[in-house]
Image (cartoon, rainbow, N blue to C red; front, side, top):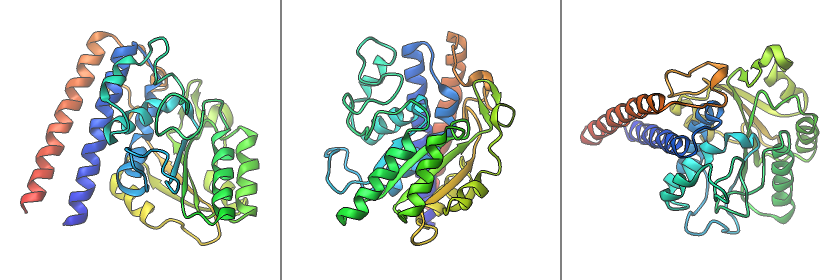
Length: 289
């Protein structure tokens, strides 16, 4: 029962983080909502259940590191950092504004909790692999987690990083592939088919597992098993739904970047309010069991 309470609490956090995304979209008028919402469950699970981090001490020496390689999905990280308490939620209202602390791609010089500037696709895994190697060499115990997208995988630098990570046995590195099947140009398999993703990582010397990346219980169970194999980095291929939670946009490539109307935003807000209320009720029931 305790585990089910924990899962339900994480689902509630994820729903509130989706509300934070909508606040930013409303403030800025548009944004990369599709990938942010497909990836937000794993970002929530990492910050609220797995990683050794302290919002009051974001530069804590032995903290775990998180990188969002697909930097255009930054709405997901901003939403979770705000919910976790890294910065005042009022900052979310500045999204899209000149000199905002939450620009269109993560900037480590502007916001606490951002470990590296990302957005040029294919760089995050290389940076993360370097961090993981440094931890091993320095005798540090921190872990490194990175989220990439299936549409990002054709970038060759990903596979250079994959080869190096396997060579040096960085089992403190986990890569989550947000495999929602869509990118701005349409189906990923039509643009540049990278299947079989798990097989490719295994051929580079990684452990690889496939899960439902929008199922919080599967995410938590997978995080609890890391590393999957000692001496090897882990790739978690997450089968997700583009724009998950934005019901009008789920599995639609045109929601990769969204320019909503006020009516669209009002409907999304109402749906998420109902979801949060439902989850709060379910969590209270589990607490009373």
